[in-house]
Image (tube, rainbow, N blue to C red; front, side, top):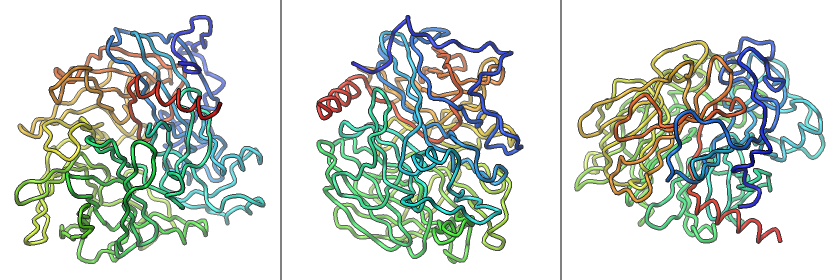
Length: 511
């Protein structure tokens, strides 16, 4: 596998001692939570080989963990109004094989980042809190809005794709992490697509959508060549911000909420994510698209709430069951939209709920699943659209000014039990967990949970591998990364065979 950093003991990146300050460790003069601690930027691209490991990596764990790094390359134009969602996207890849690990991290060179690199400074306004000053004058030829490419990353149809809901995905080399450029699914997309694609466990096809203004378009892309083979557009009734969704066996399921994405305000340099209950006066509603007939059915919740991320959904004889994390509000309040809102007010802790959609009454009943606050829910993806027993998430129990997450949880949907584990030593603020089924395993829960943690003492990140059956605090392995991966959103695992095939295909296309 050429160009993939696996084991090369002659090329070791020196690690700083805990008392040292690495030259790439950025600390701008601001108290903004999203530019400090685990969120603080890392000012260089990095690679390292034969990483130090505490414990032992499983011999059957072979592939790559790709994770987004939310990493501002230049000081934001307004440090205090900068928001976590606005960081420049990078990809942090940990390659694992034969019990050894190596690492590479690079920025995603979007067209808008090229403009800022040429200027040597931040040019674009933030889209969450906007700017206190008017927007900058755009250089000639600059894209009108910034594609920060900072939300999700994964392999599909031999392409490593990085996603951001404000623009087209970016295609990267799966080994070197070099950026090829915009990816439009062979001409099938023209503006943008969601970062939360789903992979059909039967066909391998990608199921995803694009929300532009009031219109939402659902897509299916062929796993063999990435061509769009199905699509359907419907009117949401408002410019709702739809970040995640879920699929059951026959349906695509969206929750339309008071969280509105206002592009008109963003282009004025004003906050563009608003909590506006007038947009859905009867409460948040599920829009359920039958993927066979293309009929959309609406289900009322009677509640003012927003989704954060979904576990799963499945169909029974008379219901559609939807499991997700919901939040009491999300965004700047519509009554004073231009004033920045404190982190935990803008984005309160989310809780895991179950909704059951009744096709007769068109109502959605609900109940709380776990009393442990958390985010970034995850299941064994082989059970997408089917009834599952186990789910995982990062806990958000403590409203600290420094961190966002504080542990990992395993939830049992049959017993209602939530098990929480915390980090060893100075480890905290774990990322979204990624479940990897053990090779040859048949049981749903037989595998590994991979996550990145921030070490308060070193200021760097570590990759932890937990076993999921016993799910105890002591990980099987702690991989010491040479950098801090600034805390970000999502990522995915690619098995070695899938990774090798993608790299071979990219080399062949480049030849």
